[in-house]
Length: 299
Image 1 (cartoon, helix red, strand yellow):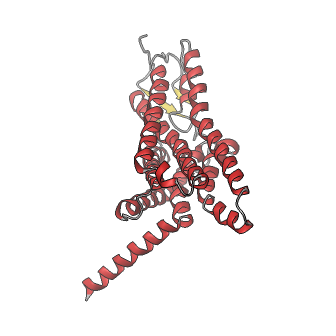
Image 2 (image 1 turned 180 degrees about the vertical axis):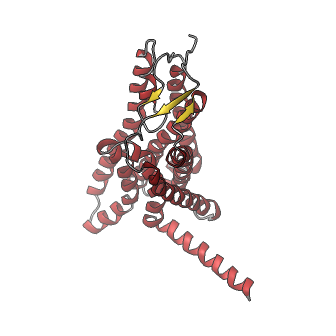
């Protein structure tokens, strides 16, 4: 169907009515800088330290990459709105923005599911873990998730391109969100509404159900461990991942989803650096080597 637009740009209305909205850019800018530096640090540590070649760090690297990319896709446009009051975006840019943002945000949940799978296998099969979970199998799993997510998001965006926008082009949201866009359509939006429901529920809740089921299995496995302290030590290895799951899903359930788009990419690297001994040791070693090289250079 021929697309009809009253103007070549769409407008965001999510920030209208907020007092002194332009000053919020300081808060977002700090979050963005911290997110970029934190995720780049995690990625660099995994690349530089050959000891971090376990399958789980493939999933950690993928999560850090997704967090970095999602922040870079989302925050600069919001900063542009705050700083320069640019509430408009072209239709093509909006569709591109939507595709990349939703691909990254969807991959966050599937990366968390991959890490839950790694935890489950490590606790269920401690003696055969290295045989059952290899770097190749984890790469295949992550690649399959990427292919699945890209396909689903392309389908959702493809159905949006069938719509005609003959009335308002004001998006009732903070960004190019799928729901507020298809509701602006003048023709039948039923296919887009169905696709939105199916895709969003599958992308968000299927990984969560798998994660919860995995931890039920982990709890059952730990109940068979002989002593209380052995159970505690085994469960402590899961606290970092549980924290990541919490900061990803709690904003979706209890708070406005805008926080879901910004907060997890900033906090994820700090949680893994603080909760994972191997990464902490690697970071200390890299900082020590850098400090020694500076001293040698000065001498």
